[in-house]
Amino acid sequence: MIVPSEKKVFVLPDRYHINYPDKSETLTFLDKETIKLPFRHREIKPTNFQLLHLSTSGVFIETLFEKASLVKNPRSTFGVNYVHISGLDEGRYAIWLKKEDVRINFRVFSGKHWELSTDFLVGERGLIRRVQPSLNLLRIDKVDIKRGDTYSVKVSIGGDY
Image (tube, rainbow, N blue to C red; front, side):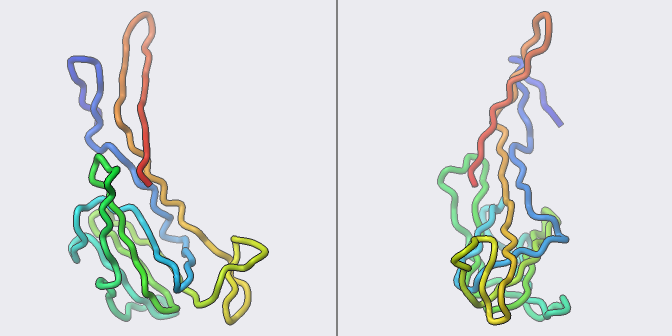
């Protein structure tokens, strides 16, 4: 929905969009890495965030809410902060952003980065293809529409992530 104003500047109520990975995609991380993702809320609560530990077949084992921490984004104008997750053991996990109805599946491996390519991890079982998140944040700051002989549209965008 676009809300018109008297100055022909249109304010967009939802001023940013976070492009989370598709739920069919399983991301890969090393156990030593901190997982960082944009988060639309001012605090982490069980009503808006869950970190789930899953079995190899995808069955729920436990919640690991205490492994996540909120990091405030000082550059954010619209309340987009970050969630940092660290200290996970090797295994299968999912992040459930409840209010956005988004599920992010990922696996954690013990190992290291392969020296020959950043696209692979070296683990006990050999090479593992690294699937990295594409967490893009698009912020729409302003939309100007000018009318003359033709319409002219100017969109100001930015990003925090």
